[in-house]
Figure (cartoon, rainbow, N blue to C red):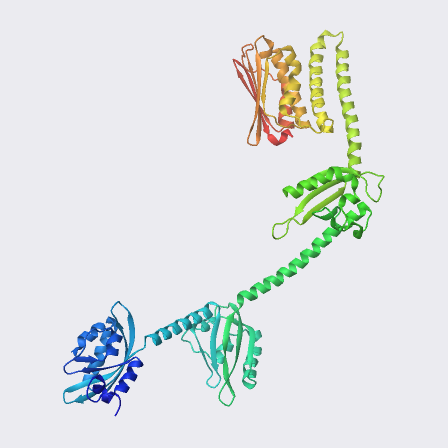
Length: 598
């Protein structure tokens, strides 16, 4: 007889064993009985407490089913129907809802029997909530670990050599380009291995079967679409009871990305070494002096050319302050280096004269370029210095300057001589006096233009820029003295070069001469307005005359002076010259490329 046979006594009959009942209660095991014919249910205190029931004695079974979670109630009813239909043993797990909403897991184990009163189902109720929670947590943990392995690319497998079958997840098969339901064997596995790696991998499989132990290998697989993937396999032999290897178990990791990075790193290292050799060769053999200084302006490194300039060996530079070796440079160069350290901005083309340790008594002209160095964190570990010996260049520039000054002086004298020759040739000959006066005016205009650009050209005033506005004022000053306040200039401060100044001098001289003879400056009250501006990539000069004699229209024939002015604008300045002979006064418009000004 089993405990289930005595269930009526446990519930309260005369055969109740108090010790057994107490033991069941202490163990959280409740007993119950279900009269299947009358559909009446009876349970002990443990069962009622487990299910959160408030009643005592027999109750309709439907009241018990009210405590069962709706999703599980139908399974309980189905078990009761099966017991009525003759099934003798019931083993069922379901959930109940206790007052307050708490859900508990219950396991029922019962046996059906036929008695005089009818068909009865009696058994025990066990609270398995904690076990179910533990199993659920374990299952969730296993799923998370499995998912973590998949996300990390570590996919497990097991190969049974006896049946030549591979057991693995679908993600594992996907590494080899196989469908989830596609069978995998050693043959299909090796068919995916790259031909250059296949023999080695196959030998490893059989070696491990013959000599069990841990295993690690890297090889390539070729997917059906032709892509190549690198895999890392780690595992060990699987042995049966006597210790014979029956297969392999382990993980596969896709290391294609790592291999690509390694290859790129090797390529980068090769390139870096090649670049380093190039930079080192450039540094050592560059035709300029190169040096690195620390924050205290001590030499860290110098190249061969700088050693040639100073006359000292490398070890005589390293660790010593720059101004200890080159004291003549301190006054001019130290503020520049401090500025570079403070601002981080490079400074270029600093020319300084000073002696060197090689020949302290001979002054050398240096041209320096200084820049700051930064490390990977943006800090400034020191300064870079480029030094050129420009002594020969300076001497050549000085000689050229002297030659230029002499040449300019002689050209100016030639203008004076030619102007004098014209005046002397016309003396006593009234017929050519007007012609001589015109020629002399043109020569003098060229002389003024030359004299205007000469100081900037040869550096006599420190290289000051010459502007179009200044040129106009200089060229028209003689006409302003005759007609004071009647020439008005509104022009941008635009730099002008020597060639453009000469062409403008000839043209403006003709404009002004005609204005004095025939235009606005030939009558009191007449004015000339000159406006110039930049229009994108073009430069425009507008000469406007107002208040002079009425203009009847353009002349029947263009004079030599006007022709000379037009050719100067078109040929020398690549511009255009337009005229508007309006009755109220002449307007001349000169348009040229801005770049031609300089």
